[in-house]
Amino acid sequence: MKVAVVLLALFALVGAAFWLFGASAPPPALIAGLSDDGLRGAPCPASTLQEERARLKQGVPPPAALGLKLRQAFPLGSDAGALSALLAAQGFELFPPCPNDESVFGARWLSRRWGEPDAYVYWRADDVGKLTFLDGQVSRLR
Image (cartoon, rainbow, N blue to C red):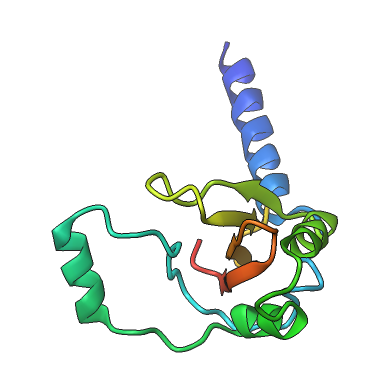
């Protein structure tokens, strides 16, 4: 019985080591070499007055490197479908970032290794699919 417990513990440790430090896909080219912007959150409307006041106290954050890079490649008025296609091709997954605003779209790339970057992209499009808002951030805070 003790041998089985020791083998199970050893198997769990080896599995955890492979998961934490094993080979994984490299970060997408879109975020390679970009600085850490920290966790900024999605551009969702405040759901309470208290949240709105807290945001006002924080002020406007400096531009994020990923957001600047995206807006150079996809200026406002560009086709949102082309942005979605690029993100999908680089391994980003779409997700709904704002439970209280369906007009905001989101895509994220989550690394599988500790210390590698995660990336989040948020955008809005008008009725004909043209970008009206675009931002992104890279975070290494996991």
